[in-house]
Amino acid sequence: MGISIGDLSSAVGGRAEGDLKLRVDGLAEPASAGPNDLALAFDSKFLPELAASRARAALLGEETDWTNLGLRSAILVSRPRHAFAIASHVFEPPSEFEEGVHPAAVISPAARIGAGCRIGPFAVIQRGACVGAGSLIGSNVSIGRDARIGERAVIYPGVRVGRGVVVGKRVIAHANAVLGCDGFAYELNKRASEGPSHRHLKINSLGSVEIGDDVEIGANCAIDRGTISNTSIGSGTKLDNLCHVAHNVRIGEDCVICGQVGIAGSATIGDRAIFGGQVGVADNISVGSDVQASGASAIFRGVSDKTSVMGVPAAEISKHLSHYRHIAKLPRLAQKVRELERLLAENLKK
Image (cartoon, rainbow, N blue to C red; front, side):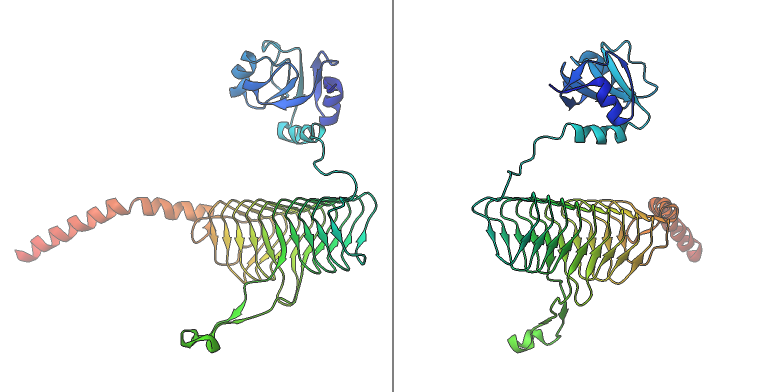
């Protein structure tokens, strides 16, 4: 049955024009949109594709003239991506989590499961663990002893939640994330080459992991438990796939951490930091709030609040670009030096 343009416009906070009763049942890119789709065309460069498609309705920027695009209706918005985000929830597909507790799940009698939880096959929930009401636990998830999962969390298949780990409300953990593995900490022995009795000595991870509310953790992330104090991730923070958060790291609230970021042990990240993909943060340093780091930056020293950095080693963007401009001139400078050396040598012979 879908949803009418009028109702969808109200949901996304837009202005509907044309046939408000027209119904759509999905979202589509302009070139592939059909008569039952809402086409997404936020940039004017996509309008020719939209005009050539079979779409009858589109989500557009508020200044777009849609009347010559072959549409019957349009939703005009001032913040297209914000409207798109809301629409993506309106058209969210049915949950992959079956109702109830699957008979193949293994749940300790000493675990506590809140009302309305869905638990998939081969999930293992150990003694003392607590799962909040309305949470969704996928197949092959393991939740360790005394771990706590907040209300309405979504834990996708294959996630591992270690003993004593605390996960807040409405947290989303994607497939195969590991929350609470041992930290990588050893007392290194320079005599290790002499044999087993001199090998590096492991330092056990006696702390845990604390994850705030509304955090999202991407697939295959690894979050190490603290050595003594806990590793912590603040409420509202989002981690992309393949991130590594080492032991004792503290990440503030509402941060955005893109794919393949690595944060070394005992580093501290302030609130609202944004890290591009493959950013690396050295151990035992402090990165302030509202810091932005461009992709593949290597942060070896502390960064003050509200600073934007890039490069290896990371520096303020203006400084890095200045350095790069000088580096780009090195071949020409080297040629000049060679010419000066030649002239000097000739003069010395005279």
